Every structure is written in structure tokens, then in C-alpha cells.
Image (cartoon, rainbow, N blue to C red; front, top):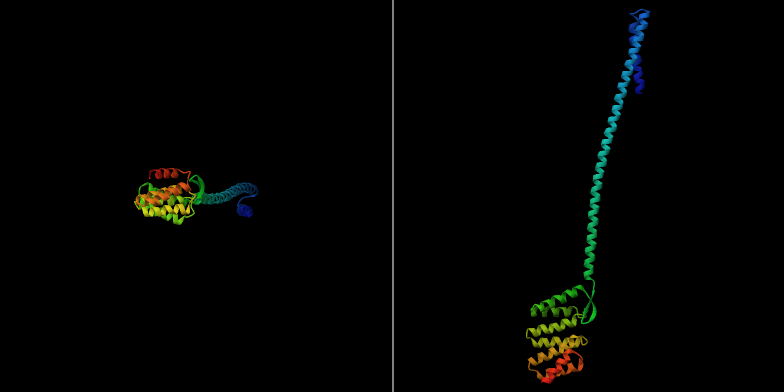
Length: 248
């Protein structure tokens, strides 16, 4: 369509020029003038066509550059969004890993673990372990009243614990450390009654005999020592009981 317009323009221009010249010159001059005019028209037509082509090419080039610039801007925008998403995914993945690692650590702490108590392997919950350790720490620090309260609470909460016999035994010792022999005897009697097979039972009987002696219940103390030797003959506590009986 553009080329057709260019050609029509050139022909129209040439027709006007030829018509105007024919009325002024004779035949030879007219021919020369026509030839010169044709040459000028052709040159002008080429120049116009060249300019029009150049303008069209420039317009297309500018359009392409504008489209390219817009495309590059869109790509840059998408890349920015992609980087943001990748960063968010990385952070979310790390948080998820940290969450599961923390959860696993917490669950492992709650899981029962195997411990050795009085020469035997037993399964103990973490809460159970913490409660017993806290009570014993109070006893070691000489806070016998608080230790007695904690040990009594432990025995009530964990009666089937592998630490129960030890807790009951140390409860008796906590009372004895406070010079409360009556409660000390009662606590140690619970060791013998509820945990007769515990290694703490012979020592509990020995402690009962000591408390009975302090309470001036000599006959009761003698009977307790005799029962100790009879029931637990091959223990260190039984040897100590024999020595005390021999001294009486």
C-alpha cells in the first residue's frame, strides 16, 4: 500500500510538470526538457522512496526497541518475584526443619530412657527423673524439710517407679535428719512393707533400730536388729546389726 502511494505521487508530479512544459518549448527543447524532467522526477522519486523507507524502518525499529525494553522490564519484574519466592521458600524450609528438629528433641526428652538403679536396668520417664533428681538435690543441700515434701510427693505420684523404694528410704532419712524419729520410722517401715526386695530394705531396718534406740525403745530396737539378721543375712546392714546386738 505504501509503495502504491509512492508511485502515484511520482506520476502525478511528473504529469503536472510535463503539461506545464509542453506549452512553452518547441519539440527538441521540449524533448530535452522532458528527459531532464524525467531524470529529476526519478531522482526525486528515489529520494522520497528512500526517505519513506528509512522512516518506516526507523518506526519499526523504535517499536521493536520499545517492545524489547518492555519485555526486559517484565522479565526483571518476574525475576524479582522469583527471587522473593525462592527466599521465602528457603526461609520456610529452614523453619520447618528447625521445628521438626526441636519437636524431635522434645519428644526424645519425653521418651522413657534406660537407667541403672540399685544394680538393675529400669525404664524411667524424663519427668519422673527430673522430680527425683530435684528432691535428692534438696536433700544433698541440707534442705531436709523441702526434700521430705518433694520425696513424699514423688512416692505418691510415681508409686511404681524404679526410684520409689529409694525415694521412700530417703524420705525416712530426711525425717531423721530433722530429728523426727516417729515419721522416720513410719517412712522406713513403708520401704520394708512395699519394697521388701529392694537393696534399701536392710538399711531401712537398721535406721528403724537407730530411731527406736533414740526413743529409748530398746527392746523394739533389739527385735528389729534380730529380724534384720534373719531376713537379710548376707548384707552389710546385717553385719552391722550383729555388731550392735553383740554390744548389747
